[in-house]
Length: 341
Image 1 (cartoon, rainbow, N blue to C red):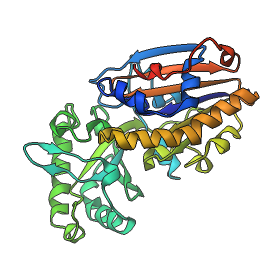
Image 2 (image 1 turned 180 degrees about the horizontal axis):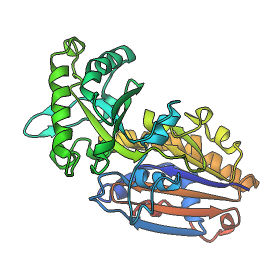
Image 3 (image 1 turned 45 degrees about the horizontal axis):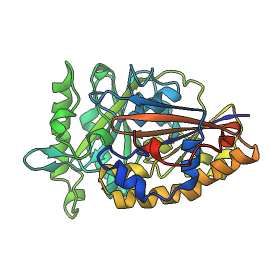
Image 4 (image 1 turned 90 degrees about the horizontal axis):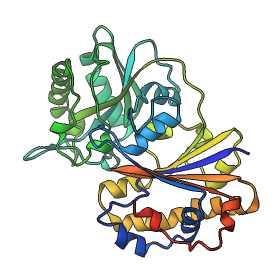
């Protein structure tokens, strides 16, 4: 039987909110999967890693990076390009997002999910900026309205941060860092000046006034990886899944062949970044019906031998393995105490 792993970004509430949120949750199937486990472990994450735990965990699971506990990294760009049907040429590639940056006492970048931008607007801004990226070892490639790609061979040593890690915080601490960071900032400033006066931004409540770059990696042959399914995922994450498993249901996912199934329902991320815990509770209730109950049912029926749950927050993740045999541990009370990590 295939191994089955469900990764739930921000499935762990923050410690200060966890007791109240756990009391409010109505997720009996999740409680069973967490309580009648074979193994349960907790893993701390380096808060200076410039990305989120689920991003580092996923990069490792897909064979793109090392152990997320010791070598957290998110070198997704070439793999995401392939998901968009693009073949990265030789060189070092980054994911690049057109973004809105708020200017106040310090610069902040709101959640990219809340930035409305259509294909026509994005294409126009892309074409306007394209000449600025014309240089040796540089190439700007369009993916979709929210996701572009940049080849920048001489920037391979830059330390970049994921947009979700930086969202809502002082951007000074999250900007690309390294010996060539000044070259990056010079190009970014040129694009910002160009877009500031661009007609596309004239009538927008949230102007697209900058870009965010991250996930750099050299173009190499893709490693073999598990069958990935995603739901409610941003474009870059959905592109890592097979086309038929983007916005997949649990039933579709469980029907896929292969030695290892991996699913990432990503809807909780936006609610957690916004600290909208009422919305978080609603989404957890939906996950109970759409994912936790079907997984538990498949385990009870013998369709699955085991289920791994990987739940994360900003500070780390927990891994819980539940087998069909472990469901017989009737002496264990079904609780959600393992969310109090």
